[in-house]
Image (tube, rainbow, N blue to C red; front, side):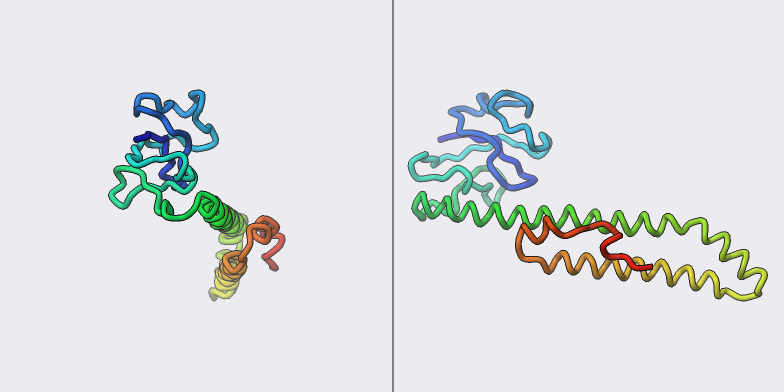
Length: 179
């Protein structure tokens, strides 16, 4: 039996093993706990069948009930578990990088749209003078073009298959938006 600090947000063991739940370091700044994670996602969980000679710690996951830990790869060799962990971490890193860049693209698009706020008044004034709604329609189309180009940039990001490609991808509107 062993206890671990488990990060539910990223689905990985944060620290451990510990003989008792009381030994698991809290708060997150405590010695022995990895401080690069957000504390609110860290929980103390038991892994009843832990065997350090068989279980590669990074392969330990939370069970379906969310009440304890288990190693879904316990039947594999220690080396195969390590290889599986590398693949899992690569996959997780790619997902995290895509998520970060996707949020940046959306933020860039929102900022582009905010920068056009002053044009609402101008378009309204022009339409009042001309007796139509051509200027406001043009403004709305400009904003829709921003959204469309943002969506294309997001899809291009999601189509990337390696972490290196995702890291190299620029989320800046300067790289995907053409007025």
